Length: 66
Image 1 (cartoon, rainbow, N blue to C red):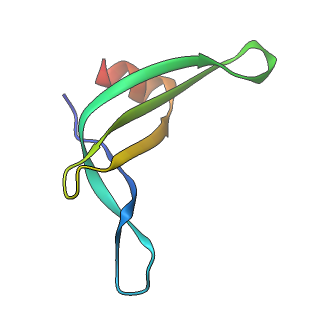
Image 2: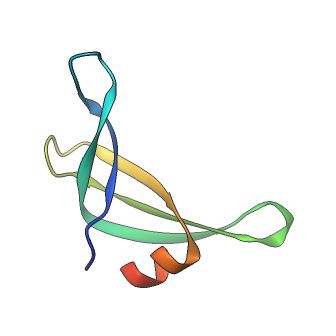
Image 3: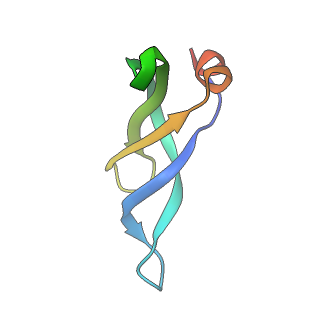
């Protein structure tokens, strides 16, 4: 499975901004968006702190992760 990076709200840098962390066990979800289109996202755990992380994906990226 490909490596996915997402913003973790718990892991902060020196300026108190969220940092990009690797996502463990990403689960791809497909939901109905506005106008009947599909929205793809990945949910998983932060590799650093085990907090929840979330990222919207394109259709191509979602297909690669499945």
